[in-house]
Image 1 (cartoon, rainbow, N blue to C red):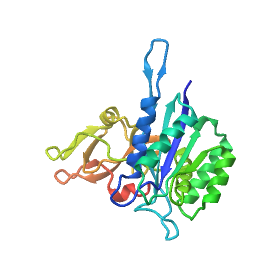
Image 2 (image 1 turned 90 degrees about the vertical axis):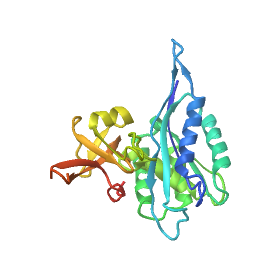
Image 3 (image 1 turned 60 degrees about the vertical axis):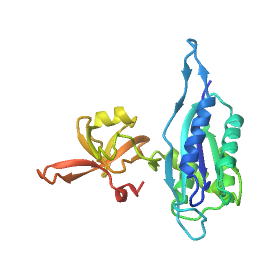
Image 4 (image 1 turned 45 degrees about the vertical axis):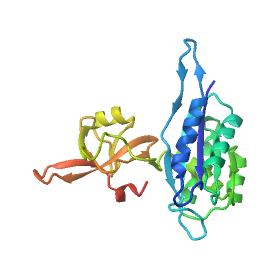
Length: 264
């Protein structure tokens, strides 16, 4: 029997050390490697999703490395909460920077009630615009049965870890960690793909324009530079915008610019 887990970490890094997103991705793969469910025909079944980055409030009273963002992911596993927590803690302790204040939040997604989700989402939204406290985080975690723990330093990372769970639950916050691989290189600085090709090659759910409209499967998108995706409407989507073609003047879809991605 598998459980769908939401796992979020925050405040693990320092300037020049391994980033929180990379650590989250490593933890996800560690859990996947240990999670094997054998069906009647002995096939191994594993399932995980993208790591999402959730931007939190930047304020002088909040210690952070560079951006104050939490990293969250969802996966299905047959491991118990204690087994998953043990794997997470071991990797956090081994990989977090010495000066970091790591926090870890784990919850069975489908054990949450509608009210639990409402409270967690509210906490996450608040953490994007105001200073929250460890006490508030622990009180809420106890109320909604989120396993929340700190693993070094001041433990302030528990605030972001819980907020990240809420923001992931909202389905409308966050950018996917890293870049979407579409085959770009120094020799191939840009590529023109249809929306259907993008979803098939990259494992995304679709392409959305900066105004929130979904593109049709046959629409062509010119991809170049850093190709990033966002989490919106509970979907993993490439963000795109239109610019006039310099030669023909016809409108051309392109992957979103850094400034356009910032709202996520």
